[in-house]
Image (cartoon, rainbow, N blue to C red; front, side):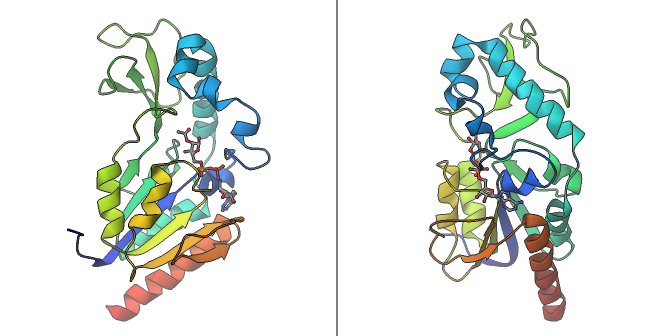
Length: 237
Ligand code: OAD
């Protein structure tokens, strides 16, 4: 049975384009990470087995860069929605810019840079913030520490929870994702017909059915949309 739509609930589905204006690269834009690195070498269990030092170096650099930048106006606007709405952020991003902007309810479906985990047991997580992971650093069960990142071929996290949140949202904002990686991309389809659904990114070939496309930079589009939604909440109060 589908959950009831909650009139005061907003779900934000975010991707790397949201953090682009903070200075972090996306994956598939022209200067994106997957145009510079082979994803199967740095973001797969096979790559980890073949060349763990290259994988650690890749994510150590991602972690250091994420720690050196700040949330932008779009992250802050999303956090401000909590003034008037119940907000759940479901993010494919592995940075912590939503947290640092002030959002309080965040599901990281692709993992988090600020944690390391044991190779053998994903439940053994250690907060490392900006620190690098080195070869030879072990978890308490004696296996090499690795980034707490969901690699290609590994199960995406929190999907059932995320799907239920999307299905009960009155408003869904998709921002900064090309919707090319499943199952996370499939979450857009869990939104209800009568929910207000918006997609913001720089460009998009095939906007999912029922979504209003707001083209442009997240730092321009999202704060304006958030203002509209906050005013709406105030006028309904
Ligand atoms: P992509 O690089 O696939 O898509 C980035 C999207 O952000 C594109 O649609 C751009 O138009 C948009 N964009 C870029 N700059 C923007 C800006 N300033 N404002 C608004 N939109 C902007 O990145 P993701 O969809 O996040 O997974 O990629 C999904 C997953 O693929 C990642 O989580 C990662 C990657 O492989 C793993 O590593 C498991």
